[in-house]
Length: 211
Image (tube, rainbow, N blue to C red; front, top):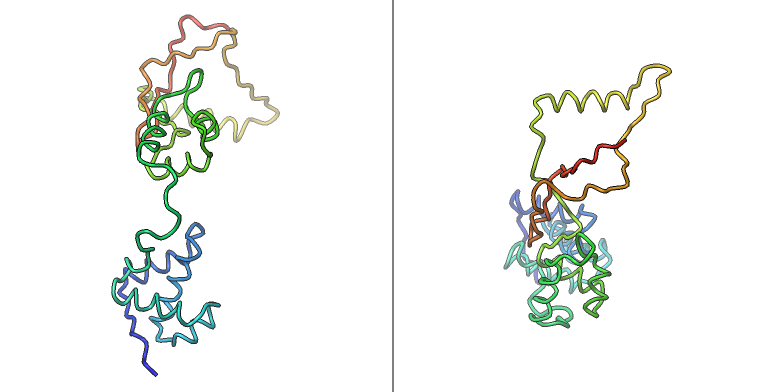
């Protein structure tokens, strides 16, 4: 009987394989391949590994040899595996362009709303967003308070809510004049691949002071 190829792992490889096995978001087939390699590194036979992991000897031998030849890269699917893309580059470009153009009366697109507009499935929109690192649902701020006592004030307010004086009632009051202050003090920085939209934390009040 031919002896299986020996697997010797360095520290980085063992750490990466262990991370895959423990990751709740890793694909099932990736976890199986990582388990096979880790077991092979413990000098277990293909038959015993197959019995432990509930697969066949051919599967164990395949990924053992792939790792031996290509190391961590060998655990990835070969190009061309899986279903081919339904939409071409033109459609993908159209989805990206639409995503980067905010809809009317809304700050950003949702996957469902953009899918209805373009006549395709929500999952297709989400795949394109993930592939191009588009996150229209996220926003950040790029302007911060210059109040030198900001930290102390925030601590005081939060402390009042978390530990109010005995028999005290804590009330929070904001302006309510039936006029929404929607104009930011600076223009919103647009969404881009790998970059969420950014806005200021403050508004132009335009005289809105009524309580």
